[in-house]
Length: 265
Image (cartoon, rainbow, N blue to C red; front, side):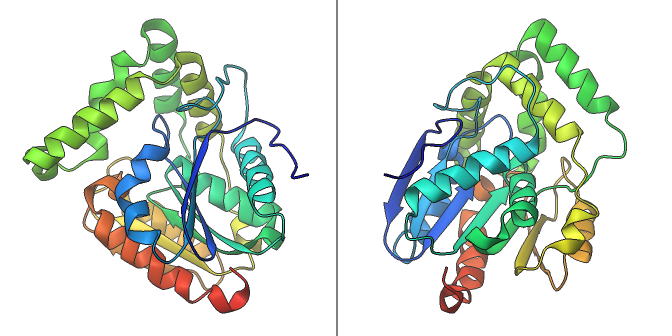
C-alpha cells in the first residue's frame, strides 16, 4: 500500500510518460499550471498538487517551514511513484523554494529540478512581516491587487487574455485561507538555501523572469551561481511566468526534462 502524505494534498495527474511534478506559487493553486501542463502531458505524466493551506488541500494555520512543504512533496511523490523512479520536480516561486529544499534533503527521488521565478534567501524580511500583519488584520483581499500587479506585466494585464487571467489569479488568491497564507508568508520569509544549494548534486534549470519584480532576475542568478553546473534561462515575463508565457516555460521544462529520461526520470 502506498504511503499517505503527512499532509494529505489535493493533486491532479494527467498524461503519460516519465513523471514530472509541478509545484505552484504562494497564494495560488495547481490550476496556475493549466496551460503549461496541457503542453507537457503528451510527453510526461504530469503531477500537479496544492500546497498545504492552498487550493483544495487542508488549511494550515499553524507555523510551518518550506522544508515541511518539501517533506509533503516527497510523501506525495512516494505515494504516486511506488516503483521509486526518479522524477523531475519543477516549481515556481514558493514551488521553486520547495524544489531547492527537496533537492538538498531528498535527492534520491529526483533526476533534476527546475526553479522558476524564485529566491534562495531574503536579506530583509520587513516587507514580509508587514504583509503578514496586514493579512492577519484585514484578510487576503487587502493585499490581492498589489500581488496581481507584481505577478503579471502591465502589457499582458492590458490584453483581453491577460485581464481574464489576472481576474482568475486574484480569485484564487482571495480564496486562500488567510491564516494559512500568513503562515506560508512566514515560511518564505525565513528561507536560506545559500549554503544547501551548493550541495545539490543533481541537474538544475533556473528560470528567471526578465520583468519579475517579486523575485528579480538577480535572485535567479544567485540560485544558478550556487547550484553546481546549474543552467540559467530567462523568459520575458513578470512573476507568474507559467501564466504569462506558458509556451516558453513549457518548452524550457520539456527540453530540460527530456535530457533526464535516460537518468531514470
